[in-house]
Image: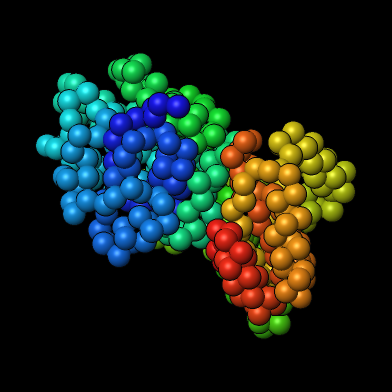
Length: 367
C-alpha cells in the first residue's frame, strides 16, 4: 500500500500527537513522520516508542518539506506556533491542529496564512486523564469521533487531507462549523470537567472529609475521574472557550436551581419527573464499555489481531502466579491488533505482570 503522505510534521509529541504519530508510523500512512517540540528528551522517547521516525532540532527544520503539519500543542500555544512556523511552511502544505476549541484558532489561521497554504481545524475526540507520550497508543482514535471544522473559505483539498488523516487512524469523521463545535464541546466535555472538579472540591470542604472520601464508590469515582486530568491543559481550554463555557455553566445552574426548588418544596412528582427525563435522555447515549474500578492497578497491553492472543498472554500471567482481577478490550483495528487493559489488585502484581509480558515480547505499559 502506498503511503497517504510523504512527510508529516508533528509539533508537540505528547499523548495526542504521539498517538497520531504511532498510528501514522505503524500503519505506513506516511513515509516520514518528523517530530519537534520544546524538550529533546521527550522527542528521543517519542522516537524510541515509535511515535515518530525522527525528530528535528527546531520547528523550522521539522516543518520543512512537510505536506501535512499537525500542531498538537496545548490550545494556548497553537496560534503562537502557527506564527512561528509561517516562514518555513512549504507551498501547498496543509496545517491542522488537535485542540478542543476551534473558533478563535480557525479565525486566526485564516488571517495569518498566505495563499497557497491551507488550514483545516481538527479535534480528535479521544484522550485520557493521563498525559505524555508514554501514554500514547496507536489505537487511541479507533472508532473515536474526529471533528473537522472547515469554513466556506477552507479549500476542499485541505479538508480532504485532514479527512484522510482521520480515516487512516481509524476515527469517525464529523464536519462542523467552528462555532457549532465550540458550543458542543462546552456542553459535553468542558462542563463535565467543571462539574467533576466542583464535586470533588465540594466533598473536600465538608468537615472531616478525610473520613468521607474513603467511602467514595464507583459512582463518585466514575463521575469525577476527569478531574484527574492536567489542570494546565484544562485552564487553557476553559480560557479559550470562555463564552461557550460560561453559557453552559448558566444553563447548569438553572437545572440545579430547579432541583433545589422541588426538593425544598417536597414536590415528589416534580422530582421524579426531572429524574425520569434525565434517565430517558441518558438512555439515548451510545453504549460504551464500562470503565475499570479506579482502585485497580492497571496495565495496557498492545496485541496483534489473531485468535487466542488474549488467552496466550493470560496464560503467561497465570504461569507466573499473577491473578487477573479485571480485563477490557479498549480499542481494536481489524486485521492489525489493539490494546487490552488488564487490572490487578496489588501494585506488586502489576509490576510483575509488566516484567513477565515484556520478557515474552509484548508491548506493555503501566496505566
